[in-house]
Length: 247
Image (cartoon, rainbow, N blue to C red; front, side, top):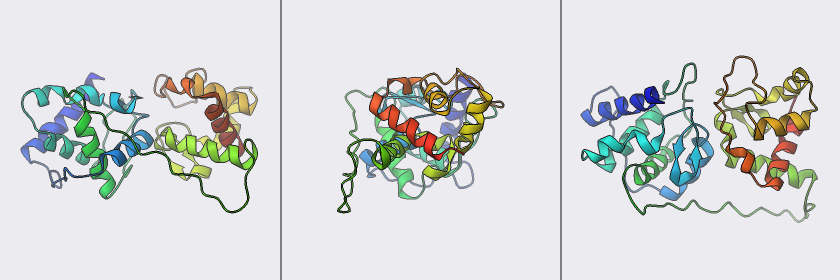
C-alpha cells in the first residue's frame, strides 16, 4: 500500500509541476460530480478505497490517504482533478505487481466527471458528500416480466454486476466486460469443476468469501470481501446471472 500511495503522489508531483508529455491539460471544475460518483462506484471501487463511495478496494492507492499530505501543504482541488484525470488517461502500474490499472476505464467527459468527484471528496475536507443519481427506471415493452426468476432475475443480476464494479476486474461476455485483474468469468464452469463444487455454490462462495478458492495465477486478498454484505436478493440474482452466462 505504501508503494501504491507513493506512486499516486509521484504522479501528483509530476502534474503539479506541469512535466510530462500529454500530462497537465486542463480539467474543468464544472463537471457532473454525481455522475462521477456513479462511474467511480461502477469502474473504480473494486480497486480503490474512497469513503464517500463506500469503496474498500485494496489493489490501487487508498484515495482517502494519497492526497492528504499535498492538500495540507496547500495544493488546490484543481491539481487533484488533474492528477486523477491523468492517471485515468495514462493508466499504468499503480498497484502490487503484476496488477496494472486498466486503460480507458472511462473516456471523454466521463474522465472529468470522475476526476472532479474524487477531488471534491478526498483529503481533509469536512461535510462534502456527493449523492449518486438514482438508477434509471426499468423500461417497459408491453409485456410484464415475472416479479422474480427468469429474465427479470437475470436482468437484476446483470445490473448488480455493473453496479458493483465487477466489469472493471473481470472478463464476462454477457456483460460485455473485458477486465483482466481478476479471473475470466466466462470460464466459471471450468473453475467450479476444478474446485469440485456445483456451479451455483462455487459462484456464491467466490463472491462472499473470495479467498476460499484462488485460481492459478491470481493472489489472495485482491478481491474485496465487502460483497458478502449484498442483500440476499441481489446476491442471488448476481449468482444466477453469472451461472447462466458461464461457459
